[in-house]
Image (cartoon, rainbow, N blue to C red; front, side, top):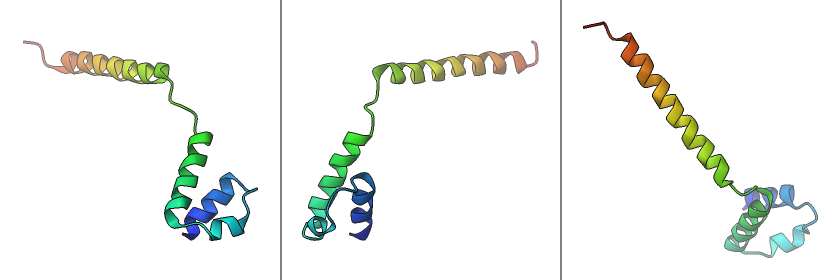
Length: 73
């Protein structure tokens, strides 16, 4: 409970402490989730595509390096 209150006050210092003390634990969790959703930026589809492309490229490089490291037959 104290951790939830501290995190809410860090994200929204204008929130009165008396208001938070009167809230139930689930209400505090809901408020914290709402504040975090406002603060956290949404994930861009381009960022996901870049991550997948980067991992794919890394896989190709690893496959080429492993095939080049094999002794010739």
